[in-house]
Length: 308
Length: 258
Image 1: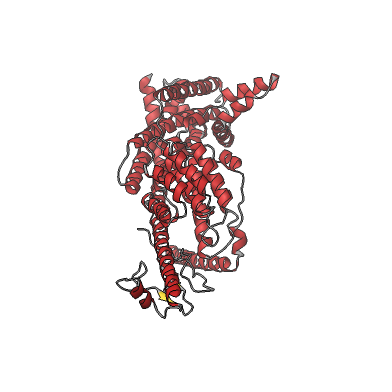
Image 2 (image 1 turned 90 degrees about the horizontal axis):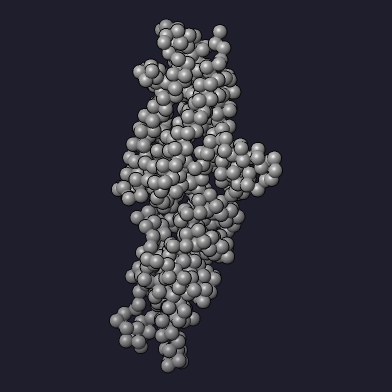
């Protein structure tokens, strides 16, 4: 073996050993590092400073900050965290860097507004974000729709929701359903039909698999809530007529002349508790239901759907 | 005269290629293809925007770095290697040497930008599956980036005509940074008074207005760029490059090369 070959083998061995060693060490460092502190730190919080520092390449910076916001929310959501302190600033920096970048308004508001653990529980901040978006993109009817959506679903302020839909319907080339939404929200705000109309629109207006799946989950939950409400009313009618609690939903089906026991959107029959409460057999499969859950029920961890 | 400038320009281009300057295209290709594949997995609904923003920003930054680091060495390297004396001992005027070097570097950057542009459009086709009407404006943005390169090349040559490579690099990069803030500088000048206003306004007009040549964000959002802006930016870049190049020629003509 020549001297040159020996040197090559020696250097290659050290290179390999050092590479493996550094990767393993980094892995251990990551494990012992206080992760939450690192995650919660936003080193530069001033949108103006960041805009200046981007040297005119603020479009790319906005994309980077939007990706950071998505990763921040997704990571904390997966860990079932209830605080999202940096989400608002991240979205505000993103939109300050590029006020015409629409996803931070449309999706960022859906991260901000729902109560934890589904979101940051900051609907007022989400509304401020949407109003900023509308101010900078007044011809985009989808932003008015999203604004109305937050008023409707999170704040239950149906008057303002109807106003937002109405404002959006006046934008040139706005989708005609905004007029319908405005009218329905103003007149029948708390109907299941209005909620169904809203979530159907959310489903149709997004190409993102997770967003569409979220809308589908809400539509399924609305179906369950409506079924449980109707069945519970039937149980009440049965109790009033027979002066006793029905022993099973078969009795309800017979009394109401139904073809069989009603089933949930997955085809599983609803159940009846001994105290006459209509329940869903698998509540974990319907993450947004408000009715039909057993007393003291706590929802399981979120499950993410693959992008379709 | 023209043939001598072309000879110097083509030699400068060949030298840049021999210096493996075009290797940056590999880094660019890796960066863009990586972003095109990764962004759809880690972000929401910005795949097309990222490809345009990242692609055009990379074209701009890679080009500026090349313009600065090659531009600053164009004169000093020839002096250090003593090849300048061989060139100037022939019937070549000093100004022809400077202008030839400028066109050689500009040509290198145009070729580099051409290949990067192909990469940007290929990545765009990969993520969006088709081109839309507004994508034509990407060509306008690329054209503006080339205009930026002309200005930076001329400025780098100006500084390298009288100072050391390190100082030239610092000065040129500073001009790039200040030029990116040209709009702010002008706004600042408008709110000052008296002598300060005079100095601020003078500085604002002296530094290259590179911010006017940056339309990347607008193009990414499909906004159209007016023909008037294209024409005026073209004229501005030509005037500014000519100004910096004339300065370089004036200094180099008087420089003692002994």
